[in-house]
Amino acid sequence: IVINFRPLFAPGEGQLCCALWDFLQNYMDTSRPLPDLPRYEQYRHLDPTTAEYDRKIGRNPRFWIDMDDATFDQELYDMRGKIDQIDTFQRPNLMARYVEYVD
Image 1 (tube, one colour):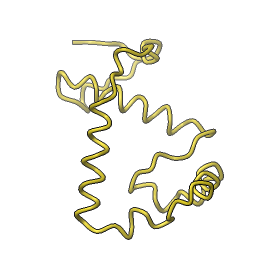
Image 2: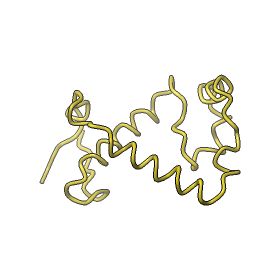
Image 3: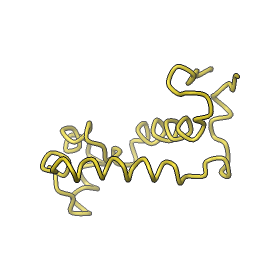
Image 4: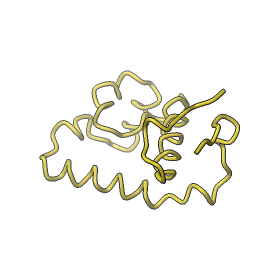
């Protein structure tokens, strides 16, 4: 299996490539809730694992919908900061089984 991330990222953005891979793995793991992203807000209640998780933590079902623009921008900025802080190259490389690295 070869996954070509080249069209998605500029050269040198390995951290974002790893973040995308983590996202895809987490998204496909039905034992975990959906990622908490604006695009999935309207579907969270339809996924049993996510609905249970949200109920347990008391998450507002309209978290993203009711947010003002400044807070929304700050949340997205904070998410990007968290991605940049992940040192994916110090962890086991789970992508190595599936990704062909090309220059």
